[in-house]
View (cartoon, rainbow, N blue to C red):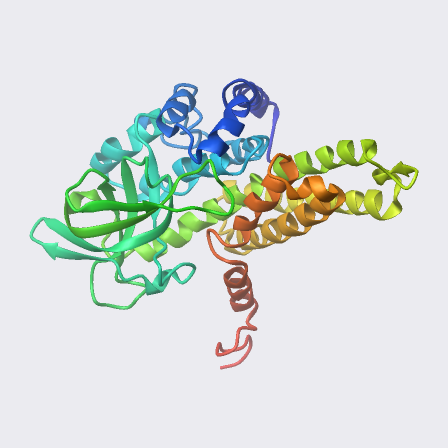
Length: 389
């Protein structure tokens, strides 16, 4: 069993926090196209929620990954997608590799303040010419004595305008594309780091997303996470947690939209009866609720395997793929049942429609998830088939 009675109190505490400190402000943050990350993260850090499964010596709770999944699922009750995503970047995208492979020195400098909520982190992998194709990144970190000199740029960086440091993936040699990369912690105030612009996005409006340039940025090599040349491998491991976390954060968000749609269609009248009374509507909502429960079961199964120390690349990839596809189908169907009101910005279904679209893109597009699965199945063209020499 993934969750036990030990999860109940932190779950209730997080529910209370969301109800009191987040949801009352979401509409204002969405309108402003940003939320106060430092203020909110500090409150979360004070409650211990930014390091549930991080080492205690750096301020974490030292719990297993099931607590991170519990948190991700509860954050889905936030009435927008941008704030949960930003929190997830801090806890399960920018810091897992640092917590697992970083030196004591680099963890004290970057991980500890991230857990405490004293600093905001972001993850720098994607580039204008290399989104889901991580191996093709061009940003480079040239060796110069005890330092790296970094040049290049990153795109679609969540928390990018507010971050204090970035977990940066860069090429540190001219070798194989899977063995020439390193993860490096780069303070955003370092000379040569430029936040070029804040991106104007379709959805996730309350989350700031930036394009960032690096012009001869000099950082000490001690800021590197783990071994030089292992960055691609570390990032692939980090992706397991990111993708599983992202899928878990969809569960309550999807359920919220179904419940809001039930309430609206029950009260909306057309042709002498409520919209909900139409079989096509209540049958579809029942089908979508079933799909959510199936996704939840897959996520919990993957979570149990991860806690047990197993490689969950296959299952995490499936959860990410399914969460994105379901979000698109569910919000599209529900928006249709809201009619003209669904096409206005003042309804929760229109916000969910815009926000959920990112799940099929960020952290690896659907097509990349399918490529990963086909590769593991031995069906990807160009690979040696199972059983063949």
